[in-house]
Length: 259
Ligand code: MN3
Picture (cartoon, rainbow, N blue to C red):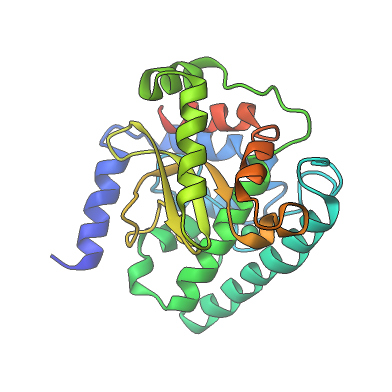
């Protein structure tokens, strides 16, 4: 079985057999706010084969809040450099890699991630970097509710014992990721919640990742995400970041993904 076939099978398993086109259309349509106006969305709907929340654009969307919005937990200068330099560069380099490797930038970025072993290291680093940051911005907001709601809250309690236990386990994943990387809350292919981490700009969608699933919530623990304010104190950044988690967004993502 080729790597591509393995990937197709794993994706098919993840998708399940009951996904209907109408559901996919609804799911993607419901992401229109997050995606802003995207001229290619109709193409994405018609070609969508992932069940949920697919259609991440190859280009950088506007930051959904001001650089100052996440103060005092994340400072404005960090946000400006992070969004307009680091993340913008991933998007630019993704465009270059897509051109060099004949990837249609109107396709779903998720499809590329799920087959990333077939592409270059440049594609892996920048497709991951772009996807991860586009998700990361949406996972935060100013003055969020502070706790998960609805079926996500129930699932977190069931899976981890309590919300506090979840936070401890998630923070440990973020603290213990050696070097640069990400901590994740994801839905595994068998539809369970799981906490994990990935190195560099890898993510759970990638066929090369040992931690696989659909990412609901991601935390960037590269030093560029926190060094100006927190220097070497990654744990303090993680603690502060919990004050910014947009649980409404994460819960909506969970509910759509579980449909
Ligand atoms: Mn980053």
